[in-house]
Length: 106
Image (cartoon, rainbow, N blue to C red; front, top):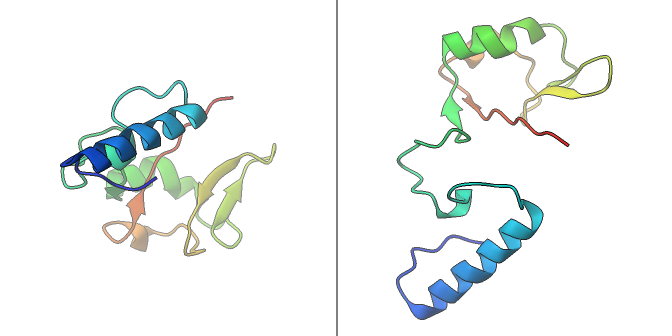
């Protein structure tokens, strides 16, 4: 899809096409699609953020010693945690890893 800063007609055309494609796969999405956001503001509720101790304690602490290759699934096989570097959840994540909370409903 790509990024655009919308400075000329070609980029405006690309923006319209990429937005249509985004809406095709995410029809219920509200707001500015991630590809059009100002990457330096970090003001959207689905942006990645640096993992703080408070967030670690609430979201990841319970998964210490429960992951296999950086993946935790519950008894129903639903993913609860994935680390793309395959690291096990541990306190050293605080201030050293980014977190994205994904809440997806079928």
